[in-house]
Length: 236
Image 1 (cartoon, rainbow, N blue to C red):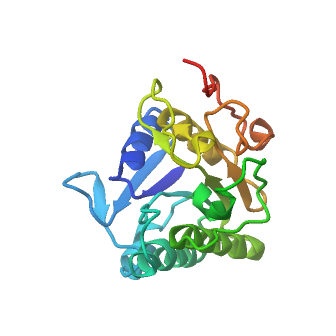
Image 2 (cartoon, helix red, strand yellow):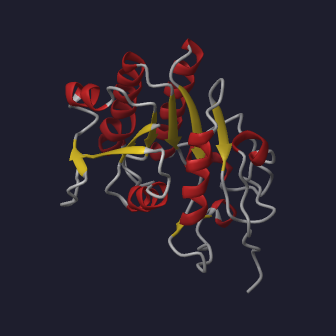
């Protein structure tokens, strides 16, 4: 399987590359608008370099889209190109090239209106409230769903919160600790999603926290994987 990773020079991208490199049947191509000197990563800005993006997608079976501005305090002027324009260009190019599956990194900030409650969070309805970053992630999700309704590419949309670099780390008290996910768990979930593409676009909540209000209950049914050792909040 030929897989293209966007945002491959970022911290999640680097960890995912290390994780997927053990999969001998995967051929990985890496893109980032800022390669940071990494010789394995091609420099392409998805928001502006549409021809280069089209060339990069030739023959690609699946995309893991990690690129974007991840600052939840950012304003629209900082978010439109990396979080909306880039996603639309990616899906247009993927559809044209015949790429069948996109694993799209989203965020719990798409549900930013739920900050003030502690009730279980369903996939829908979704409401980012007044948070621009959350609205940009919701727009990306809507682009994914629109292309899925047309048949190709279909998407696995993964919503998650704080990413914990080390397995021993505990979630920070910032909103929402229940949505935190270990980097190792996130990489496994992305890899599992690649192995089990959906027939139509699916949106999943990911968390490493046991009894999280965000965790998709049938995760194992949908992608064939679940968190092996959940974090129990309130325990040492």
